[in-house]
Picture 1 (spheres, one colour):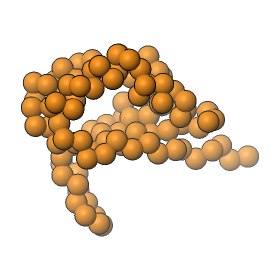
Picture 2 (cartoon, rainbow, N blue to C red):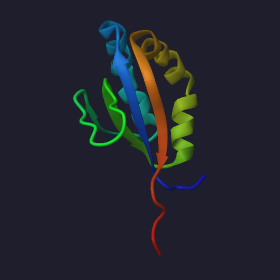
Picture 3 (cartoon, helix red, strand yellow):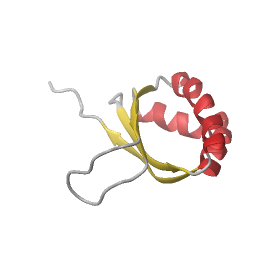
Picture 4 (cartoon, rainbow, N blue to C red):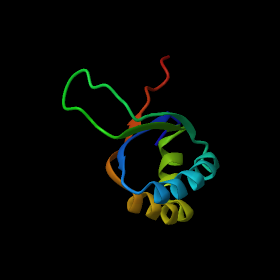
Length: 103
């Protein structure tokens, strides 16, 4: 694992807004704890090719794969995720590696 940044891409459908709000409120402090940066979300994406993805798309990043995996394994994050699991149907949570620096 190197210091190449990674990007997290999430697609989910909110089923229970109150459960999901609990998750959202606790998400940002834990994200920051691991150097994560929230980039954006969109509830109205447009698919130009392939099968459309409905629901919310979310993008955030970490400075490295190591920090992303530490975030995901964090005990507090896993406890908080119970609210996401209860409040949404997650289609995917995918880690995408950034490009290494060009020399």
